[in-house]
Length: 195
Image (cartoon, rainbow, N blue to C red; front, side, top):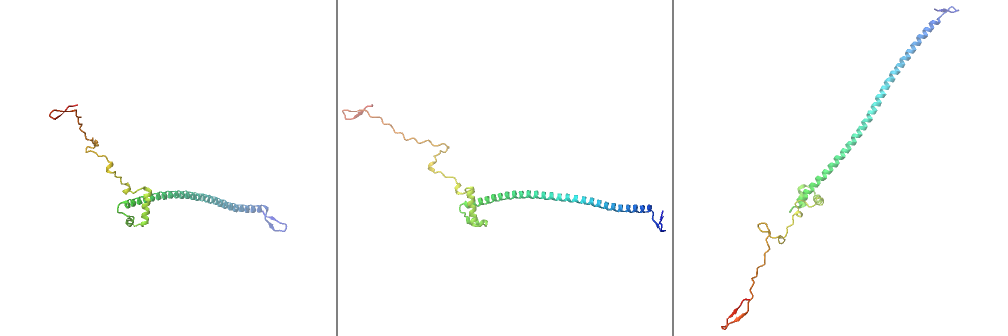
């Protein structure tokens, strides 16, 4: 219903104005709600992304910690391997030095000759031989290990049967009986009587 003003012009009724306002309000709220829905969706997606980010950062930290633990274990293993290798190298070097020392100790062999065989400097071979003797004693087969020979005079005589010979007894001396008194006969012959 359109009201008529005193001037003769028509003006919208109050009911019509309220309807238009309500429609406008609904449109505004719809736009606001749509904007709010977009904000809520964006917030939801942001929350999900932030959660994934936090999980990824935590996983990265765990990877770094695991890497540090594995590297530390590898360092310990490497040190163990290095120590074992150094010990083995020292053992093989000692065995090589002992072998050269044994050759040099043989009659007629010199350090210079052996150094030429193994293509090593003479000073190094001499040092190896010296270290081998200092660390392991005389080389096998050297003159110092030969058993001493006892003089023949100190060895008791042994019979063929294996039993020692009996000492030789001094020779027996025959006992001479003592002579008794001597009597002279008329013919000049001496006669003796037993005691």
